[in-house]
Structures are given as structure tokens and as C-alpha cells.
Length: 353
Image 1 (spheres, one colour):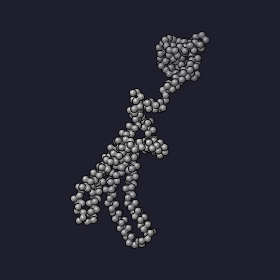
Image 2 (cartoon, one colour; image 1 turned 90 degrees about the vertical axis):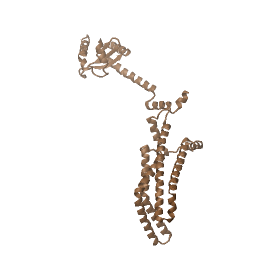
Image 3 (cartoon, helix red, strand yellow; image 1 turned 135 degrees about the vertical axis):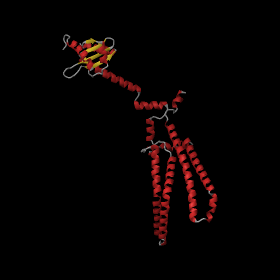
Image 4 (cartoon, helix red, strand yellow; image 1 turned 30 degrees about the horizontal axis):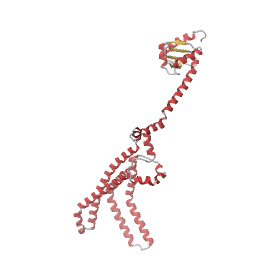
């Protein structure tokens, strides 16, 4: 049971895991959002661009028909005419094509931000495995895609059928209408269908966007063991870090003990504290703490001091106050007088300067 629990992906993804997924190109991007954005903006542009489009189209067609009257039916003439038609049609549709490109690009940026990675383009030979490929065809993701496609087709088909059915009586009168009125009627019906279809696509895009986000969050979830391993990689193995800290403390302690023989006096608290002081008038403005310790370290400082004939002065209040000062720092200003008295006592001992 413990192993099963540890293997479940119940933990939220860490920042590193999200970054790793992003570098691989595995991001929450919905194609339905791109489709909806391009369709909605194109339809919106069409309402403003349509009058200009039909005007330019009429002028272009008139010019082409005029040219056709003087054209000789030769292969070169047909090729030139075809190129002219493509050129005129391309110029007319260029704003729509440009809008589709811009909206498609920014709809991706809106979903995933700026992302440039070539990892998705790298060959992955594991995808050539026929068994894995067959599994993808019957995966949950493929089932969702099928449901989305069916829902889109059925909903848009139902809306289109309802719109056309409501206009059926009016359509029976087309036979008595002018060509211009017929075109206007068909354009109105088509526009109505497109607007409602666009609304459906936008709703599907919103639902798909939320689903893709949720799906990616589930995919990025981690097991407790994965989180522990990632923490070890990022922060280092706690045991190794503890060992490094221990070695650093030992080296620091050795350097501190090497300074004890240079001290002028050791101020002690007879129970468990020792503080080594050194003062050089030529290089120091005030006495400095060169070593300090508690318990067994304090005892070791006293042993080294005794071996090097350094005086020990017992003074509980001063020892406690000086112990709070960092090694290498001068004694506090308020302790100058008390420390000066101790140093004066030490310098007055036989054999001391």
C-alpha cells in the first residue's frame, strides 16, 4: 500500500518540472482557441472590408472582361490572363490572409507566452513503435478529440439546418427575384450561419482551453518520490550537505584554535565559556576577539592557552558579553573600560608586557 501511494501523482508540479515541460514544447495549447480567434476576427473584419471588397472585385472583373474582349485565344494569352486573375484575387484576399496569420500567431502567444524551442522537432524513434502508436489511437486524448470534432460538426450542422429551414419559405420566392436580390438573400443567410457557427466555435474554444489546461496540470503532477529526487538535485543530498557543513566547521575551528596562542588573555566563565582577546596597539584600534567557544571547545581553548602560558582571567559578566561578539570583531565600545582593566592586569603580571 505504501508503494502504491508513493507512485501516485498527487503532488502539484514544481517550477523546475514546469520549466522542463516547457523546454520540451509540452505546453497547454488549444487549437480550438486558434480556430475560434481566427474565425471571429476574420468575420469581424469582413463586415468592415466587405463593401470595399465587392467594389474592388467589380472593378477587377470589369477590367478583366474588357481585356478578354481583345485577347487572342493562345496559350500565352491564357497563361497571362490566369496570372492576372490570381494577382487580382491575391490582392483582394491579402488583408484576410494577413489577419489570419497575425491572429494565429498571437493566439498562441496568449496561451503559452513566448516560447522558442527545437526539441519537438528532434527525431523521436520511440514514436515508430507500432504498439505505442496503436495505443495513442485509443488513448483518452484521441477519444476527447473525436468527441470535440463530432460535437463541432453536429452543433454547427444543427444551427445551419435551423437557419436554412427558417428561410425556406423565403427561398421558394427566389425564382421570381432578380439575380442581385438572390445574391443578397444568399449572402444574408450565409452570414447568419457564419455568425452562429462562430459563436459555437468560440464556446468550444473556451471549453477546450480550460480542458487543455486541466489536462496539462494532471500530466505534470508528481509523485512524492519525484519531488524528493528533484529536491536532492536542486539543493544537494542533505547527508552530503551536512557532511560539508561539518568539515567547514572543523576547518574553521582549526583556524580559530591556531589563533589562540597569539592571544593576550582568555576571559572565562568557569562553567562553560572561554573568549580569547588580542590587542596590538600598532595595528588595532581596539582589542579583538580571536577565538571563543563553549563547553568542550572552551576547555580546549583553555588547554591551548595553558600550554602557551597565556593568562586565564575569570569574569562571568564580561565573558558572557564578549561571547556574543563575532570572531575577528573588536570588543564593544561599552566594554572598553572593563577589557582595559583586564589587559592592564595581564600586562602587570611577571614576564608580560
